[in-house]
Length: 359
Image (tube, rainbow, N blue to C red):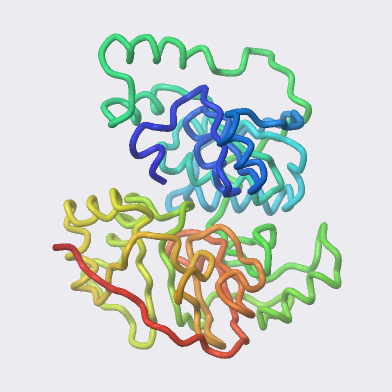
């Protein structure tokens, strides 16, 4: 979250961090990927890393997304088509008119979840959108250094006629609002669809996932009761996500019995929420803003979904136990719809949650 916000992340850089979602930085035209603890030690000691060069993959998407369909829907659609191992051993470049029309925050959502289809990382070629996003940020070049940097960044696009080890092409109009129904991000479907039969996965694992979730093949998720909502993570904890959420709830009141955790992805996002008056809209609708951080994305601290509760979320992974013992973590799309569904079976965790507002 913070690297792009400050302009530390720039096109042409190689960035590594001990977190798989380091791939987020690829949205700015950098080569970014997660590494393990031993590799972190190697990088800190030498600024070098012994790494096997991955194969190359280009995923092109053309056309306009339907109204209400977002970048999160798009990446969940791609993962559902390619599977969670479809890009294993590859580094992905996202291309096509659809990607070119996305702003930086939505590009970050796409690249963030590259790892969820097995890729080492994902990137989008730097363009005017990238330059406009970086200009004026704290660590971005200034003056003549900026002009030199932009001139260099413009050279970083793939050559015309470049050959990739594997290529996929998709049409944006085929993408619908998505929801995950199982225990990994590849188990996704359109929000209004019924849970499909197993395809491209072991049937035993498929039925085990449905049993864990408390769902049945052929069942629809629309109409299911929701107990918890989580808006945050390095996937969807940016100002655009809170703006979209505020637009949905403005003039309405939160339903009784629904717990909503609104967690800015960074202090900068928190400040923007306050400066833009989004916090007032949330307060009037009955919501409480929480401290920035990872929170329920991975059940950090006491931010765990209680037992036998259904939750929808904007984060990246719906693995078993991700949101707490016996609970998957959500991997889904915006709060206007169920982004993912979790059925927790463990004993309720005790603890407190620190809530606060702007001021």
